[in-house]
Length: 324
Image (cartoon, rainbow, N blue to C red; front, side):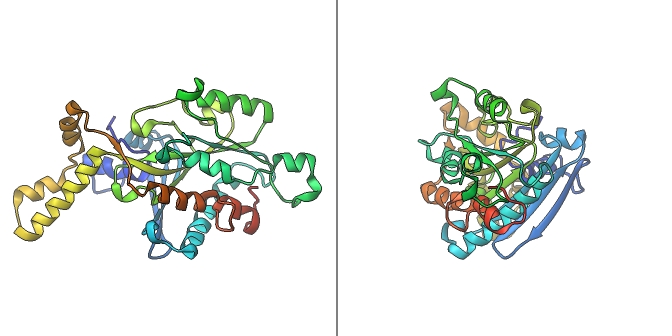
C-alpha cells in the first residue's frame, strides 16, 4: 500500500490519484465539497466499498474535513462560526448512530505535556461532563441533557497500558452507547497544521500518521460506534521540504516562464525521494510550528471550550439533539 503518512482521508485520496495519474474518480470513494464562506470549506469523503478502502488505506465509512483558513488571526466571531459548522457535522454523525439521550464517552488521546499532542487532554479538561449530575442531582440539569463522561487515559509510555485496554474497561463498567475520540493528527501539508478538523465514524488508530501505530479504537475493537475527531498538528520534515520545493519550483517557473524539466518535477510527488535522503542523517523529524500553543488554544476553543463557542458545548445550548 502507498505510504500516505497522513491521517486525513481527503489528502490520501488526492495522493492516491496523483500517484496513479488518475483524472477520474476512484471506485468506492464519493466526494462532496461545500464552501461555507471565504474561510471555511467542508470536504466529505465517503468510502463505500473495499476498493475504495484499499485504495486510500481507510475503513469503509464517512470522513468529514472542515478546513479553516487564517486560523492564526481569526476573531471571536469566526471561531464561533467554525464551532457551529463543526458542531452541525458532529451532531449529524452522532444522530446517525445513537438516540438523543443515550450515554456518550469522550476520550482525549495524547500527552498533556507535549504541546502538539495535547489536544485530546485539553479538550477533555474543558468538556462539561454530565453523567454524574444526571445520576445524583437531576433537578439541577436540563431534562433533555445527555449523559456524558470523559477520560484522558494518557500514553503508553507513561501508563504502560494500551489506550484501548483502558477504554475497554471503562466501556465494560459504564456502558456508553457511543465513544468520541479526540486526537492530534499528522498531515502531508504544512498548510493544514491546526487549520483542519476531521470527523470520522470509523474510529482511529492512534499514532498511525507518525509511524507509531497503536491498537485501534473502533467499533470492531469495542463493540460500540466510535467517532474520531482529529486536528493535524504535525508534519514530517520531508513534507516541509517537499512543500518548500514546490514553492521554489513555482518561483523558478515564474522567472523562467517555461522549463520542461521543472514542469516535470513539479508534477511528481517528491516525498519518498526527499525522505530517503533525510533518513540516513536522522533529519526526517516530526515538526510543528513555533506558534503551536496559540493554535492549539484556538482549536480547543472551537472543539470544546467552556465558553459559548465550543462546538461540543454548543450542542447542549443550541441544537435539538443534545450531546451534553
